[in-house]
Amino acid sequence: MRGPQEHAVASPASAAPVVPYIDLRRINAPLVDGIGAALARAMGHGRFLGGEEVEDFERAFADYCGAAESVGVACGLDALRFALIGAGIEPGDEVIVPANTFVDMMEAVVQAGATPRLADVSERDYNIDPAHAAALVSRRTRAIVAVHLYGQMADMDALSRIARRHDLALIEDAAQAHGADRAGRRAGAASQAAAFSFYPTKNLGAMGDAGAVVTSSPSLAATARMLRDHGQRAKHQHVVRGWTSRLDTFQAVVLLQRLPWLDEHNAQRRLIARWYASALDGLGDLVLPPVAPGSRPVWHVYPVATADPAALGRHLSARGVETSRHYPVPVHLSEGWRDLRPPPGALPVTERLASRLLSLPCFPGMTEGELERVAAAIRSYFDG
Ligand SMILES: *Cc1c(COP(=O)(O)O)cnc(C)c1O
Image (tube, rainbow, N blue to C red; front, top):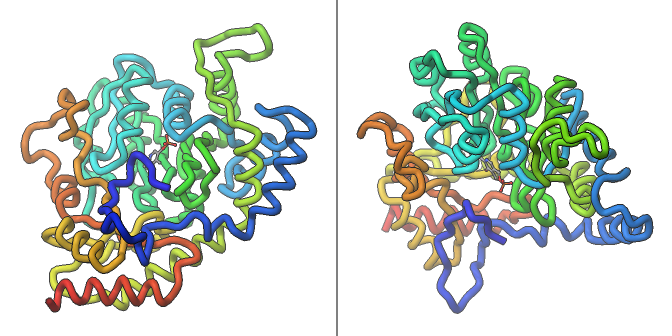
């Protein structure tokens, strides 16, 4: 299972990889019976959008994040757009976003009618650099979006100070950080509103597209509820212009079954990250992902940096190890986003990371033998 944002380095056509980049079958195997029974119950009551399962999941996920409300929607992009509109972003506004991120972020900003301003990221955590974000604040700036990339939260303390000083909204893109925390704050409850994606490969994944807006603001939650359902406050009361973006009951069923496993799955990802950190330390020019003080990432992605990640990826592929890249072409250098292009050299860290990062397999259920195999293949690349 591979999403549009996963640029996998393919294994030889003949053989399946010995170590896959991710294996959702292992994650879902213990859940199949429970999910099947719950789906059968949903087919029995016949409500396929909304209903008890959606409300139960919304309640459970808000509690998990430590926020007052969560609003289930159709995907992460919709959650981001609704969070921005709910926070008051309007056409003509500027929104500061990190340049090293998935394209959803920029899409959500322009779909809300605003203009993204790209801040560089920091070598300390690969997330938005608060100093660069502060330098981009203009008269038109209305919000900063922190993307908790690779499973590590951005520096929300520093970003909150900037947002407060300039009276800006602060929004989280927590699509890669379900369960992460940093300096006593938890992803989803560290800003006015957070957007989550439950794309199948995320740390909490559905079996199709799904997302949620998480917030402790009753008015923002109410706006998100209207935006996901044709702008309706109640049936036939279309008080704003909305979208069709409800959370399917079936996806809520899957998410309700998977949520109790999330902490265990994140713990396994942390063990894998610790294992890699000791097994790969000091190899060639390899740079392991940085962890900021007080930060507990959930390792949605385990990115290592090296001078030629494509060559390392090919070397691993030839040895049966599948890898991925996040993200080899920064959004501002992508064909569809030419108009965003900042002056050359404005985003040095983002461009350096794009040319250097390779994502290693890191998923719940990965075995010690598979980890050994990945590490041995990387060692042979640098010792070769
Ligand atoms: C997955 C992801 C999203 C949202 O993805 P959807 O496909 O819209 O659900 C947004 N931002 C980041 C950083 C992501 O990884």
